Length: 328
Image: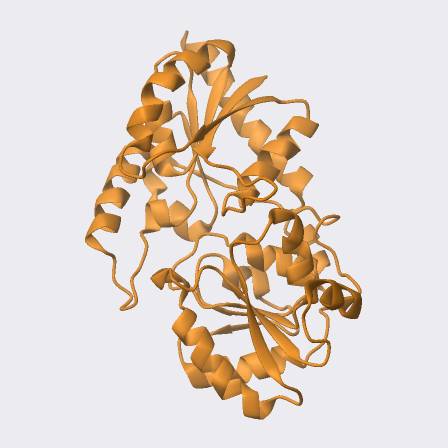
């Protein structure tokens, strides 16, 4: 089976990015025998997708199927009619991206309408959470969250990793998931919660940011933290929460996407309302909890290991190609 993966620019050494989960998923498919070609969309933000339309018509000649990651990438995939398109929606492309006031921006509302229309034109849709599936119920999407490599994301010797990263060994470290400049990520809530938590913690409490970090270093950042904080207004199925569970790092998060389901029943993890006092108390408890005891078994029980998820994606491909042959 030959698949053309269409996405934004994938991270590589010296050039971090937010699409590491896409790169890991496609690599896991290759391990199962799928022949993957990559088409990365780059260029000026306002015209890069238009620039890719011509290229995709040439690239599809050598493949059986297109797997587009993100709504606009699926729009590019549909610029040709030779091959079926499977669209993986990420979260904000279907649910929208909220601003600091918790409202959808005008641009986000427009993008959401475009992506909803695209979802009705592709051969199959993959979404990351049940919340996203409900928004696309009429196209019967497959709910397949991104998987986690439990070998790559694993508990580590915290003092050793902190010395290598240059983090203080004596402090409690909170890791903020996301770019502080992105309104949707809720950095202000995390900062205020940190201030509320400091008087409740037995050691100095500091925050590090997981953004613009080389993908090879992400497991160390997650494993070296005392807790991960996710303060987003909107998410699909945030990989960083699963990465924290795999590293046995406690998580404090807002009630977004599939996070409540992921953290349900995991001692040391907390899902909180957007209240700095509540968030701060949960943060103080999390950083003093110690390593999780059930994070990795939670991922296994939910079939979120990388290979398990890859087999589900291959099954979608096979269904699409069978349907294509029947209709030919």
